[in-house]
Length: 417
Image (cartoon, rainbow, N blue to C red; front, side, top):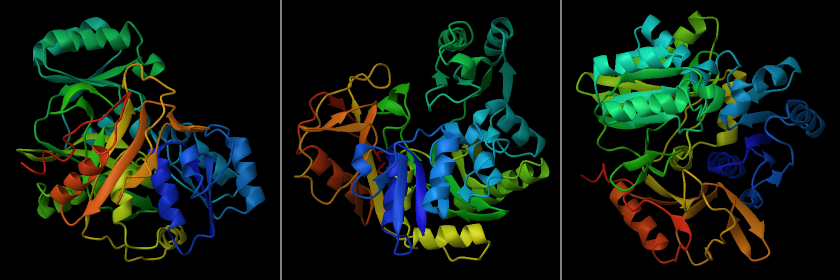
C-alpha cells in the first residue's frame, strides 16, 4: 500500500512513523509534512487546505489511503471532496466533523441523546453571558464555539476571570469567528483522560486510553495550551470505567451521529472526566489528539497498514495493543502559548538514547534543526511502568541544555500519586 498523510505536526509524525513501520506499507507521503519526517516519508509541498492539488497527487501516485491528521481540512470538507472523486480517504465528512467544529452542535447532540456532559448554555451577546456567570458562580468554563487550536478554553477560577474571558472572546474577538459565539458550562472536577476510537461504517475499535497535560506549567498551572505532554496507560482509571465510557459515551455518540444523518467515520476523540457521578464528556474531537497520538500509536502491536485496510474494507480485525507504558514531554519555544520565539537552534539530539523523537514545529538549517513553531518536539520513552518511563525520559532530557525552550518537569504526576 501507498499512503498519504495530510498534516505537518507531531501527531502527523506519529502517524507517518506508524505507517512506515508497517510491513504492509510500501511508501508513505506527507503533505506538507515537516523536515523531521524526511527519514520516514517523502514530503509533498502541498498545503493541507489545497484540496484539488492533494486529490490530483493522490490520483497520480495511486495512493491507496489518505489519512487526515488536523481538524481544519476535515471541518472544511476534504473527505467529501476526495470521496466525490472516488478517492479512498479516512476521516469524517464536513457534516460529521461539526462534532469538533462546533461546541454547540456537540453539546446539543449530547443533550438530545442523553450522553453525560456538563450543563451549559450558548451565548453570542455579552450581557446575558455575564448574567449566567453570576447565576452559576465560579469556577466555570468558557469555550469558543469553533476551532481554536486547543487554546479556546478558559477555566475561570473567579467570576471576574470568567467575565474577562467572555469579553476577550465576544468583544475583542481573540479567536475571530471561532469565538463569535461561546459555550459556558459548569466546571467538572475529577480525573481526566483521552479515549480515542477508530470508527468506520458503524464499526468501533477503541484505543488504549491516555492522559494529556493542557496547562503550560508544572502542577497544572498557567494558560491552556495544545498539550505539554502525555502518557499511556492511565493506571488510576479503572478498566471498568473505560468499559463504562465506551458503553455510555463512545458507542451512543456514534449511534447518535448516524441517527442525525451525519454518520461519523474517522478518529472519534472523547475528552473525558471521571466525576463522582461517573465519566462525563469534556469535549469531542474529530481526529487524533496531539500529543496523545504520540503515546498511543506506539503501543499498537498490530500492523497499522493492515488494520486500516481491513477497517476500510469492512473486514473484522483483532486490533492488538502492547502492555508497555509510553510517556512523553513537549519541548516548546519560550513564550508558548503566547508569542513563541522562532529560529532558536535545538541542541544536538544525537546523544539522547532510548527515546522516540517526534517533530512538530521544526525546520532544518545548515546548523541543525531550529524552532519553527510553538510546540517544537515531543520526546518519549517506553518502559514497563509509567514511573519508569517518566524517569527514563527526564534523565535523557536533562542531559541536554535547552536554551530558549521550555518544558514541564512533571508529566505523569497524577499517575504517580
